[in-house]
Image 1 (cartoon, rainbow, N blue to C red):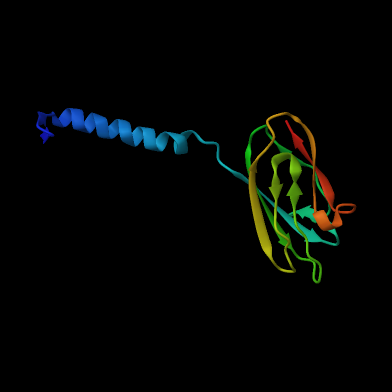
Image 2: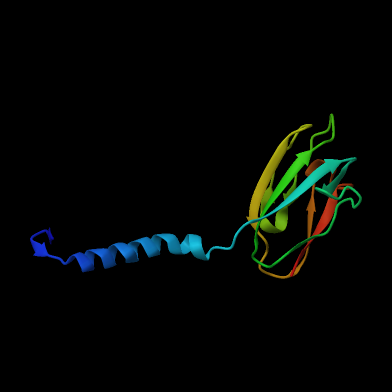
Length: 131
């Protein structure tokens, strides 16, 4: 094959294509998958989906872990949101029966951090434990 007047072997073109493909796919292959945590809002509290017995639960994360928080507002007549300032994560307010989500990377420094609903911060707040 000839490119700009230079003869190039098919093996060289195939090798170049393989390198380009690998360079393109490497970030996707090496990135950490995003973990999803679903919170349900009822009775002025957050609950983990599937466990409506523990209000405002502690959520455990690994340092730097990619996380997506999904919030389902099941409280009729009251708007709620979700904020995790340590990761710069803030969700828009949700009305009854709406679902929203926010993605972020957990802080890289292990520790105890707070999450909350901004309009109801005094009642609706919990802990994110980063290990």
